[in-house]
Image 1 (cartoon, helix red, strand yellow):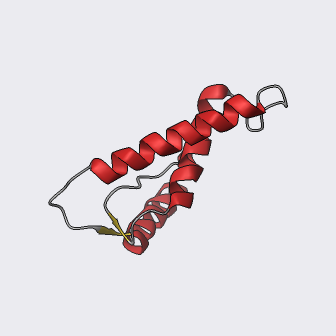
Image 2 (image 1 turned 90 degrees about the vertical axis):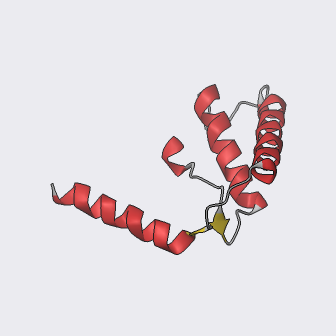
Image 3 (image 1 turned 180 degrees about the vertical axis):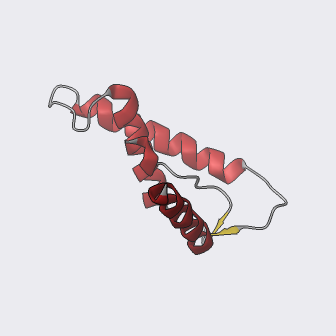
Length: 89
């Protein structure tokens, strides 16, 4: 489940609000053990996703680096190459 949480910092183009929210949702799903909460837990689940997304956005906004931004396409190509390597074994 958490394999879909990816590094969001220092990319060009920058991560979107949707990227941050998707990562927050995956995180809350992982720690709660629910992929879809019951009606009784929906509100708490939604609040948790909002809180994690807000904290993540603040973190990403406050981080500083001198490293040049990474290219999303180049990083995706590297991941695909590593996957193909693992499949060949």
